[in-house]
Every structure is written in C-alpha cells, then in structure tokens.
Length: 56
Image (cartoon, rainbow, N blue to C red; front, side, top):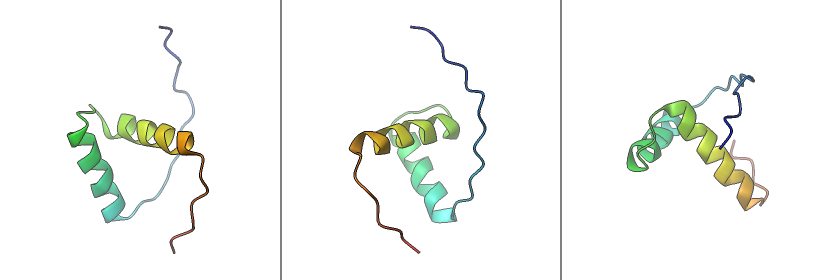
C-alpha cells in the first residue's frame, strides 16, 4: 500500500470534554496517537454522510 503524505495542517480548538472523548476512543481502539485517532474519527464521520446539527 502506498503511503500518502500528510502535508496539510488543520488547527482546531476543542473543549476539554471533546479531547477526553477522543482520548477515550483512542485508548479503547488502540490507536497510537491522538492525531491518528482524529483522522480515523473524521473518516468514520464522513462515511456516515448525515448532516450534523450544530451544538452551541
């Protein structure tokens, strides 16, 4: 499998609860880094394809 370079940085601010939820998912899923966990969660979210209601 070819390795695709990761050359785009996307800074994002999150709440403590959001970061904790990502870390919990990361450890449960045995993902090595937080960045990789976020990439996988984004990929999963994009496959769902459903619109998300804004939670402000």
